[in-house]
Length: 295
Image 1 (cartoon, rainbow, N blue to C red):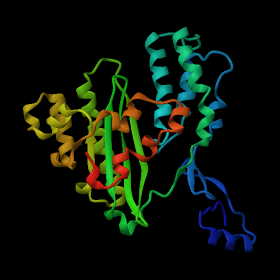
Image 2 (image 1 turned 120 degrees about the vertical axis):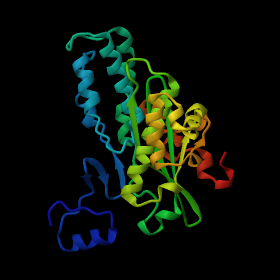
Image 3 (image 1 turned 180 degrees about the horizontal axis):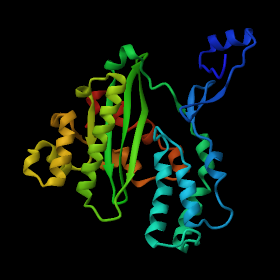
Image 4 (image 1 turned 135 degrees about the horizontal axis):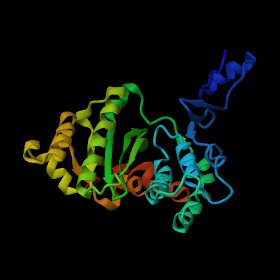
């Protein structure tokens, strides 16, 4: 047996009796997996080993932010802080090996000094559903935008042994263009990314996309989706058309900005704040309650 791993204690016991090695730490598609606790995590050393001892240059800022490998977007709010810093550095147009200005350095050190806390975040690998009962679960997708970034995050709500379980499945964030784009248009882009992410999830799991519930906290973007796309300008028309290709206007609902977990994604968080954020890991409180408690 070569490079095999499992979270099944029964299978691990069989391997041990046969004298085969049992891996407790391995990787799945580049993501660190603890087979004992069956959790996914990230080693901070993979990122912090590239940190310079002296103030970072533009080249080093890019090196650290690009080595942040997180295909599921579980730690996107933390990675986004580094992307903000690199964008700020880039707009100042310094040389690649030039030390950035003081205001960049003031933001850089608080971010890098907390990256070691990433190793403390262990996310359950099991999403709380099996293939046979996936259609009985509820998929919630949230989109949000700020002047700096926009993105989306998807959750799966299931009921296991009469207890509600909510799992963070995937998130995706993008920096807002340097050339100014209005906030409503960025919110529309967030809704488009949410639709694409939802489509990807449903194709991979064969979940019925019409049963999913997408959320946005901007009423203007929701109004665009409920209107005739041809009545809007080209930018809005094209994106609303793509959204309506996979989702119906009746599926979209309004979520208060203060309760939108994608707000964390669009504004970014340092590692120590993300560690204690139950909203990010488990969604809004009202998702974890009964459906009758939804706004």
